[in-house]
Amino acid sequence: MTLAKAREARTKAREVLREGIDPGEQRKIEKITRKYRDVVSFEAVAREWRRELSPAWTASTARRNIRVLERCAFPWIGSRPLAELTAPELLACIRRVRDAGHMDTAHRLRECHEF
Image (cartoon, rainbow, N blue to C red; front, side, top):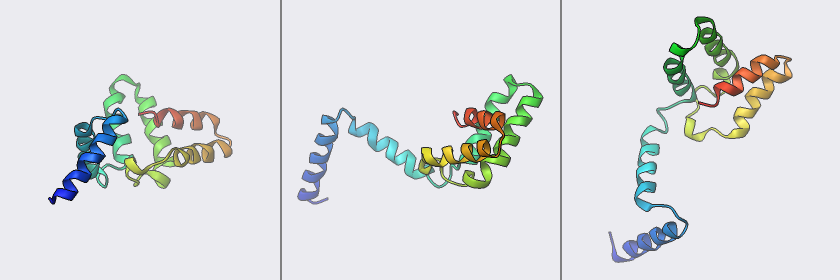
């Protein structure tokens, strides 16, 4: 690293500190995000969420929750990396279901997105 680049990095770190963000923590988060960005899809995280919570659910609730995700979310956003999903994309999935007249399913889908 050249002296000019080191000074530039120092200046950026100081700016980040002024914003109240720890530069070391920010680097750790960026490293983890880069590592898992392409690996962790919305579907993978949703299925893991279901596995963790399903022991507390009845069998019918567990089946219903995964079925809602499989029919209403996975076809549109399931393969997308979770880090790249935006709120409008999630809202579009929920509205698609709601506009089809399935209010209970839309409500359940919204709850599933809160993992």
